[in-house]
Structures are given as C-alpha cells and as structure tokens.
Image 1: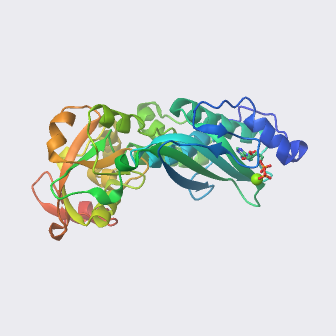
Image 2: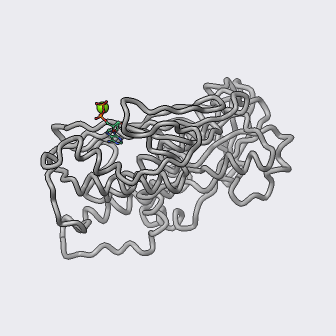
Image 3: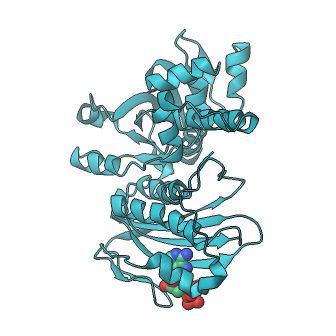
Length: 350
Ligand code: ADP
Ligand code: MG
C-alpha cells in the first residue's frame, strides 16, 4: 500500500553498528540548556533545575504497529509523541529523549534513517533534545523504545491521585478520531489485499487518519493552564480510552465520577465515520484509544478561568468514592463506567 519512496537499500552490515549510529545521529543539535552532554559519550549528562519526570514506552512491530500502512517516518514521530504525552500528563515540560532500537536484517540503513527523520522532526517541533540510545539487532521485526525526560517544580506536578470530591473533569481536544482512523486504515488494507489495483479513497477521512498516523502531544495544555493560572489537581493522558483513564483517576484518587454523554467532544468526521461503520460514537470515545489528549481535574473555583476555551471541555465532576463511576446518557439514564464491555451498552441498551 505504501510505495517504497527510497529504492536504495544499504544493508546495515555495510556500515556496522557504529557507522549506523553516526549516520542517524549526524547534524543533531542540542537546544536545551539542561542538556550538558548529548550523544557520543558513555552517557549523556543533564541538569534540571526542577524535579525530573521520566517515562518509557516501547513499540513492537506486530503488536503496536503494522508497517504495511504505517510509514517509518510516522512511526518514529509517533514513538516520540506517545512518550512526550506522558511527560505533559504530569504537567511537566519535556526536555530530552533517548531512543533505543532493535532491527532485523530486513531493514536497510535507509529504513532506519526514515524512522529517525520522524524522531528528529518530533524533537524539533516539541523542543526536545535526542541525547542517546542503543542500537541492536533483532531476530524478528522492529522494536523501538523511547525514554523521555522532563522537568517541573515539585509542587506543580500533576499526579493521578490528586482528584478532590467536587472537582471538575476536563478533557482537551476531541475523542475517538484515532480509533476511527485505524478502522479506515484496516479497511483499506483489506481492500488493497483483495485488489492491489484499487487505490484507497481516503480523502474524506484525512483528519481521522492523521490522528492515527501522526498524533500530536498536548504540549500546549500545561502551558495554557499555567497562563490561565489554573493548577490541575490531577492529570492523565488518553492513550487507552476515556473510560479506562477515568477509572485510573478514580482508583488513584479514591473518588467517584459522573460524566455526561452530551458533553463528550466529538469531531463531526468521527460521528460520520461511526455511522458508516455502524458504531456508537460514545462507545468509541470511551473505549477507542490513542487520542493523546489530556484528561484532568480542576477545582470548581477555577471554572471561570477555563470557561469557553475552545481547547477544553468540562465533561463531568468528581464525587465521593461511594457514588461510583457513571455516564449519564442523553436520555438521562445512568450507566456504570467499565474499562471493557462498552459494546454491550450499545447493543443491548443496558
Ligand atoms: P556504549 O557501547 O557506550 O553503550 P554505543 O556505541 O551503544 O555506546 O552508543 C554510542 C553513542 O550513541 C551513545 O551516546 C549512545 O547513547 C548513542 N546511541 C546509540 N544508539 C543510538 C540510537 N539508536 N539512537 C540515538 N543514540 C544512540
Ligand atoms: Mg550502548
């Protein structure tokens, strides 16, 4: 489905491990003051003035991505984004990453280069330095593991455990688009397998596919909150789906929550695609993952400060733990929020 734009195939053995590392890390610039030593020594050296936030995510071919429709550059980009999203979800500022890859001999130097183009682009856009990593062979497929480092004042770090009874639950952006993008890509892959002559018709789904293939991390949200002088009481990023992230917040904070179906922000293209695939858009927002939006709570006193901001939607509020976790449907029914089994809500009407 994706054409080989770069027909040149240099086997990695030709350059060797060191040659490959030199190749992919050439012209790297260090932009952050806190990066004292980057790539090229036994270890990188950083000096954060505030507390350091550190997070790692690993992506495995065949488990987390399918190279038949994910271009390598996009994969590199996304691998960085998913890590930065975790840093922003702590209300911190991302500063550095390390990137480790395991590659089978099916990947020529050019493929690794393409992967790194995506990594470097994300670094540039998000103002993050690539300061190290590791390179090794793999007997099957591609594995990419990234560690991201960020900083923030200790007292401003937003944990999952900080929700207070009565807090408002706020989400950035809109939900469900990345999952619907994946449905489109899977469908087009199946069509292409049947008939390789068939060119995919995906123009109407650009937003959905972009949200799947080129997700962005909400660096702007912690910045916006600082500007508005709003300190989130708790925060988490939406990598899985709204319902499982709500459960994480509630469990960590020992609270309950009620959210309102009519408040869940959906892009019109998500609603259209859901109709086409005969899926319920609320179910998709609750269970579809990879939106990388931020979900956080604020004190009710801060409501006026965020009110009307187009990036933020209040979707519910926190209650005592004994109230449990519920979605109030458009029809006014209360449905328990569960990590799985949302489909049954739609199909059986329970
Ligand atoms: P060592 O043997 O001391 O671990 P390596 O030869 O593995 O050193 O790495 C040399 C330098 O290149 C180090 O600074 C390391 O962090 C960096 N590096 C290695 N692999 C990668 C990679 N895939 N991406 C970015 N930097 C890398
Ligand atoms: Mg090493």
